[in-house]
Amino acid sequence: MTFPQWRTQARLQHALVLLAEGQPVTAVVHRCGWSSASTFIDVFRRTFGHTPAANPDGRPRS
Image (cartoon, rainbow, N blue to C red; front, side, top):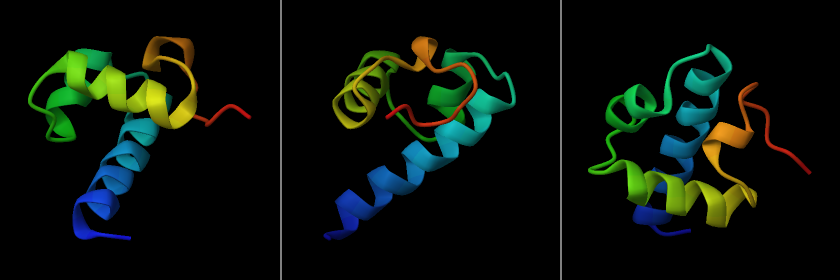
């Protein structure tokens, strides 16, 4: 795994924690270091198969 891949995974895991705490997506975007909400949502959807709004408990869906 390259450093950029590792960093993305770490940011996504932190995002899951924040979403589980009930943080709004826009706050999660900024707290996890994403430059835009659309980029975050795109990466989240490609990784987990759904948008962050469809994952309010912060747990990855299978």
